[in-house]
Length: 319
Length: 203
Image (cartoon, rainbow over all chains, first blue to last red; front, side, top):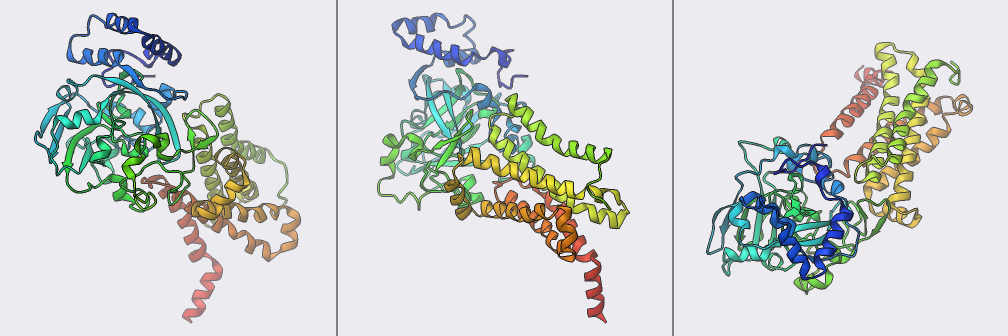
């Protein structure tokens, strides 16, 4: 099967590290000071040009967040996606991945901040040291995956633009180039571009993450290359893919699924087994790779870390 | 017309309509149903139910319009296959989505309208499947025809059940809806009884 990596270095999926080996290596790297020496020494000699150094930085990222669960396979994570820009069927994003061109990527930063501007991807990524985090991603459709993301905290990125006191929210947009529509954007299944947003304290929470890699490799296009949001305590659709715009605002921004069906998808969309989707239950979920469902946890299991963000809020009202 | 008569055509039809099910079982065993095999099986068995319901409903209009009489001999088999795939669909949901729990299923039927409707459609198929036997067909006379008009209702409920679960992209359901509304339209407008009524009311 052809690889759908954005920058594939001539790799195919056969070159992707086997998960067992991947995990064993990680354990070894974590096992002491030797780890970092080995990691450094194993950086290939060609780790010089900016793109290659991205690969090197991804490979050298240390795991900072564990999860006591089996990782979802690389194949499942990259072949079962909701990314309507590349088609509405789960298999479409993988099949149409090549349609997304991530070269010369820029991110426009706007709104209530002291340092707005348009930045190249290299500008955005350069100052950040990468880390790997294992998060569970819970889709609003009642399935979930356990995913090793590589990236950096969203807060570290946002602080660079110096948001003002008026910045109460952060809005994000996915690529929508009218001159080069993605296959799924040729039909108006939703109002393009895809939009998402967070309250500023949610965005600044240490768990909120910008992912640029998956399983230690550059993020495949179908997973939201070249950079995406990961907010693990919210339903998956909040974790917007292929970000081209970040806007600080004083008012709550419009978000795509809320625009489509406000009764079904609130601005907050925190994972909550006690608040059902109007059409289906959220009490249980199917972990991809398993046949039977398991109970869904409040805030997707991150209750201890994030519940304080919502003190005094009625979660069935602010769903 | 003896419906149970064995023939090569009937055997072929029997195997052909079983093929989607066999294909799903084979792919399931080979673990070749993608990342979410349960979802795939559920969607596929649901679609085949709808396809066979619509096919069954199309047989008598085809006879009337194009004069194709022979498919009439297969109509019962098509209908029973619709019921067969509906049973598979419900079983997969009960076993894998609801962990074999009747409480979970009952909760869903009560609280989730798309489940209520889908389950009702399946319930309505039961008397149709039972009375498809020659024994009932012979004894029920005109009531048999009246009862089996329910097939239209089950198809409509099945379609609503399908559409109700969609999040944004309705493209595929348009095809099923278009076929169903053509069939319903033909039944309502093209039915001799209705034509008679219309003529009488105009007189």
